[in-house]
Image 1: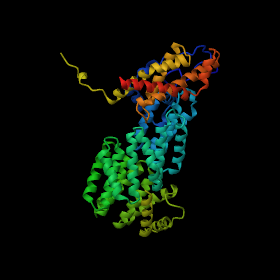
Image 2: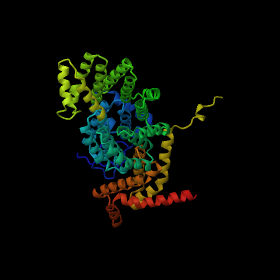
Image 3: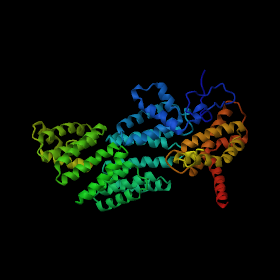
Image 4: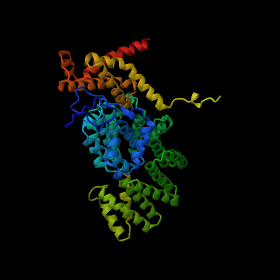
Length: 391
Length: 132
């Protein structure tokens, strides 16, 4: 029997059971026990789903979970929460989810929920890939998010979120002028729609651009305002990163005590929220401050932790950058052999991820000098400074 | 006699949110019902069932990032008109129900346009509400 699907008036689920064509008057199936589930029960189902490794999930489990609109929306929420903690895993989940949604006919979904979920999974995949340094892939995922969100019933807030992610990517690419020019429009959308969390993120990104362009006083002012006035709107990751960057700015001004105070506060915020990626960035900043203060041993320990934590999180480009900075500090401390190990670990990623332009002489010089076990400090410094500007 | 702790319990943010969703939906339900029965010519039973589905969709919709629950009402009307249009097109298309000029006319219109007209009624409702 061929099946005719009409999802508009059937059930609260994105059902596996399309409506029979033979129905003369469209039946309205009972919603069954699902209708009375609390959000806690739905969350428990989703958490149980996520505990099963992706490769071990049966088709039945996948269809039952993703085919249930309540579980699908809860799953997306959960993945967003996990994105900063484990971008590698979440990007794989998001890409898998997007593939499942793409393969499923729209008739199985309520109204605009297929487009919405496609857009969310694509945006999530792009956001996580950006954190992982896979910048070329991000654009396409953001395009996919745009394409799906455009067909939802209320696209404005969703498209503004994509725009924000695109600006974050431009920030990564050092296109600060673009960000500073275009960010106010996105921020205005968030303000008009009352999206306080997203608005706070815009202020954070603005402060980061000001910092990167050397407008340190303005950047510190914005970050101070953000920390003082976020009123809970700023997520722990951003609050922690705001404090890390405030500390970095204070350190640059030689105010080491205030810098370390900001780092301590950031540690507390980020550890409470288990924000591993931001904690790894914090270690980098602490290492730099301690090095400037002449506290070499603890600085080296902080750099080592930063490199290891970024690598554990699958953030390969960040890990490679951390290893280059670490190697530079090791070399300065006379630990030549250890510096070579770090560079040997970093150089393949620098090549594979195209972290420097083709023919970048310092990398060739460095590779050759490491091979000869006489690390070239000038080449290392040049590479570190280049990557520092890019990071 | 033991006194239940529940007496002191304040509702969670989630409970408050859910109640607001229900409240806003209930406030809009009269208009939705008129749209479904009078304009899209659904039977009472069909309209009632569609309203249940609309509530399920609206509840999930309100969890999306964006406007407040109350500001989401115009989108609820768009969804209502879209649902009703697709349903009636399906029913008429399968020959279960005959169409007339009035039904054909509304089915030819974009649901967003029809919803926009209904939104004016919402504005009037809000005006009366604030006036009261």
